[in-house]
Length: 329
Image (cartoon, rainbow, N blue to C red; front, side, top):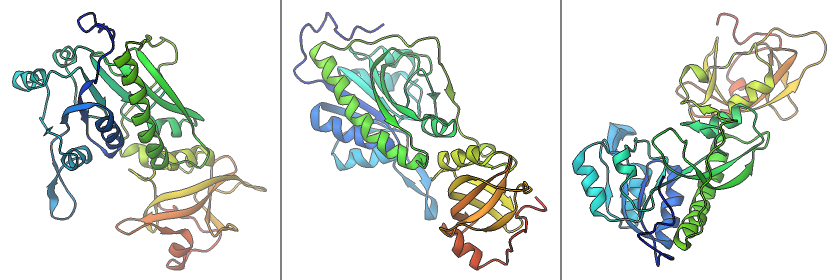
């Protein structure tokens, strides 16, 4: 394992030199903060992709930020090629910092920097290793999450943890909201970790074998809501997949993404799942679910249209209390 108090570089390092690797918006605050404090010698990000109107090639959020910061930026398709690895070695950086890069770092790359590769991961490891820790934490009903900085190994998020920082998940918090909180938190915690490395006081600890869970990548099948389930489970899924990819139901009026909803217990005789039974005091569409529960849907998005309030959608549809949204679905 890499020694963060490397004998080849005894004593505190005057100013750490860094190669930053990241791609999405989540990683941008970390890049900006590290640029303020350390010697960022280069940025590596995923290649530009076609998106938006006209399918123009657009850089990643990190690529765009690197250009604004006047930092050298590279976007190889892979880090497995020898020429790319030689280019990284020629930068002679003390360490590589990785935040949501999206490309595999082979062992040959992990071995390049003298202080190794440090990853900022959006969970309290070993819980939620993998691609979608923010969404899976909300979906599972976790009330506590956070950030871990770790010394990277070849395994998936298995490296020893250096620092952690906690954040509460509230009942109504969406993945988008938690994303923004953790993005800033990652930037701050990385600076704490790098300062420890710089002063020779970093103490990585191996992850425990107990409590390992995996945050598997979200598929389109995950996004469909089953109204036979209890509403509290469905509310967590709606929050977890908001704003992207969005949790949806298939209805007689087409596909509806549910953007904002809260769960509630119903009284009296259980209603069949999928039945509309009125408006809440806040103007939400009340839809029956499994186990005598219901969703109070405040915001939704019809296919091909912008998000709107449930009240606005109801104004354009002849839907009566007692009618099912999903009779033929």
